[in-house]
Length: 366
Ligand SMILES: *Cc1c(COP(=O)(O)O)cnc(C)c1O
Image 1 (cartoon, helix red, strand yellow):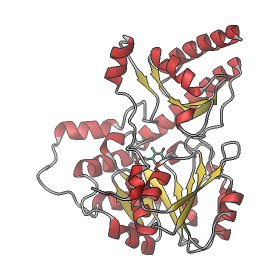
Image 2 (cartoon, rainbow, N blue to C red):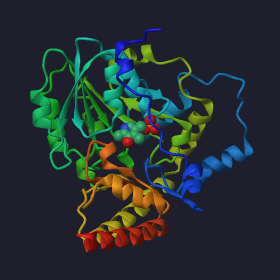
Image 3 (spheres, rainbow, N blue to C red):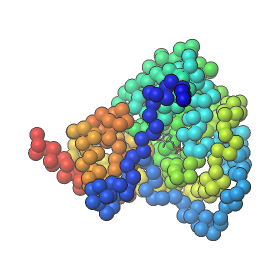
Image 4 (tube, rainbow, N blue to C red):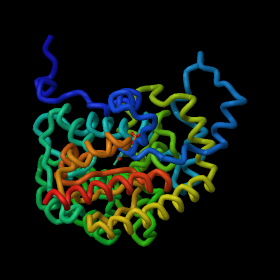
């Protein structure tokens, strides 16, 4: 059996170790998972209440058009219903974009480090991937622009960028869009949009009417806390959405996910609380890092990328033995860092005690 040749060079997604296995391996009774930027406060209580009382008709196919949720999202973000495309997570929209626009002989441009799924899916479609190193965690828009050639089909911008958490300043983004050729699709991945505290930096949506080659990605997986249900969406002009809709599977989002997202969307209080809690925890963790002198990026998301005085892998190992799962930067293309989700205050305090202990060990070792 011969698949596409590229399949021999790529590996399936390496899922982190399961919590149960780590608990057993290190004899821990509790593990705090801070590796995937899930919402530590859960999800809207209204969603839970609804599903405790109502069981969906699982024998019936979902509404492939996602009509109810479509209307609610369109109203909420003030776009036309025909400007939306739903996916099984925004990750599926990434797949659809690659499937629709990339093939052998084309190329696609992205930052490095950034969200790894852009590259993975682009390579599967046979495209060449051009990676432009970030500068101090920011996208190097100048060099991204200079790398565009006749074969460039898609440019990926991630804001806040994963893993740095830094937002592309609105003016820089607009300048980029002004220069970028109209036949190059620009994907602006805003998976952490709800966490952005600097409101002057946002509002790509207002630019959608000016640029027919822009698609913005959003998700219910992060601030809304519905990662396990898999639902996200893309926003663009209707021509683009219609093209992408051709490659979408007819029933790609489940009825359960659609309903949960619909209810979650309405619970603005939950999102506001999540954002406020996240901000408070961020400030307190940053204060702690200042005291031990570890540098970090000025994140506007629910995770923090921290420079470590030893390899990220060593810090990861120390933390995992103490019950905290973080991401070593070596796995993210950002050596000598760790990235961790900003968890609940009490868990962050416990982790800080451990980091302070490690910091002392490192100082003594030198
Ligand atoms: C988590 C994440 C996504 C994917 O989220 P879905 O669960 O597929 O909606 C997309 N982009 C970035 C940058 C992410 O961090």
